Length: 167
Image (cartoon, rainbow, N blue to C red; front, top):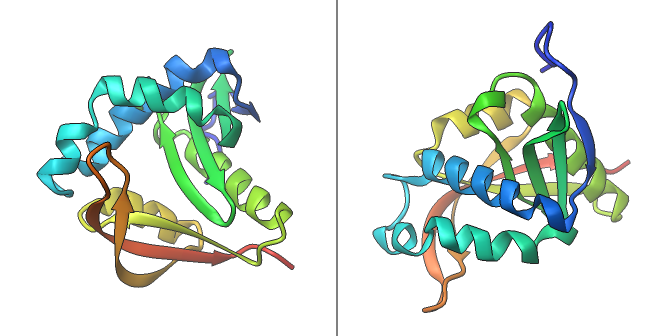
């Protein structure tokens, strides 16, 4: 997917501490859009806007942001061989920002010496599942993702998507 004609191309860079509030806002907004109605109520209860404001600063070192016109338009978080989070603000969805971030995540996984990247998508998030499939990711099937919470892990039914990335 290329950047929409006439739109400014996103610039990718390592996240900085000053990006945390924008990351938290985009993360909460996108997480809510893709997860409400698709995950256990216990997870919805703990994923408040405040929880993202607390989590985002701790994850800056794992994060690459895409900026458009100097504004954070989306981000990706990568840990080892897992693409943990890919979110784009509502204003920039469909513009190619997500595809740029996903390609960067694949590059980062490969640069860490892994030959295959993986990510989890909740069962009901059809939009995300179509996006990953369009970008060459393959659904390996259902598994239980353990989402962290202060009261212990919450079991979330997900699909595991994989893609070869290393040479």
